[in-house]
Image (cartoon, rainbow, N blue to C red; front, side, top):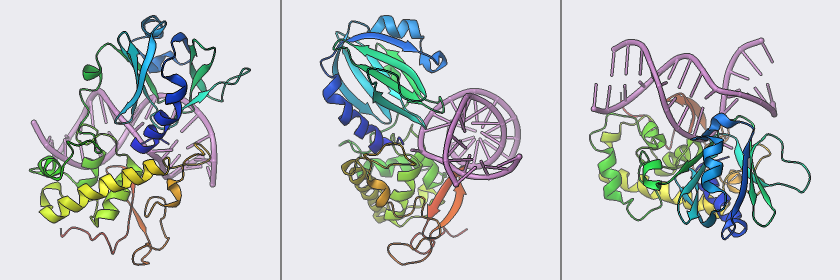
Length: 268
DNA sequence: CGCCATGTTAGAGG
DNA sequence: TCCTCTAACATGGC
């Protein structure tokens, strides 16, 4: 489920029910994914009010009053869900109680998700790169990030310390829209290509947010973007631009999808 | 059974 | 230092 657009969708969905509420409890059945510890997090958040629900890269950020931040990362299979009066969602790993009696569940089949409390947001997110939809992510800024790097394009796009929020789906989609092969060296892009890549990244993320993200498998039914992906998961299907079959390759140990005609291989 | 999966990180080695 | 690859985390679908 979760890259930047999916996390943004989650934040928008849960904001109305959470902002203004106070935490009344916190329990975890998979404590290793909670830091500093379940007890410390509980003591830090209980009684505090949710002043805002925000997103930083792929992190869901609860801004608390009078201070503090609760950060949740969904990783591969995490999701938030309001708990019914009786019972909890399948694979529930943690539950927050709220002052209105509702319970918010963190369900996560693969247990990769993370729940973190921090007094300082800057500290907790220090390793993250630029927000691709923020104003400071300009063509010039992208040019600087690409400059002098021998790295391939796709691993750079997936590196959260460089650009924070893209994942495997939208990296492939952005490269297709920019007409760039994932194995191109970062320092080989010419200015018009940098501009196209910048525009492609922002366009695909904006469109995905507009469509409430991508639904994968049966999870996350509000997502609509899966019907508009042009290369990801479309191996063998015709390219929407030229009808050439989409092909799959491995780049940086990740499944990668391209149109071999629209995205030419770099020369040697 | 084997392979794949929306993410991230530590460690090895070039 | 930069970069790539492997393994690991843990589970489920095909």
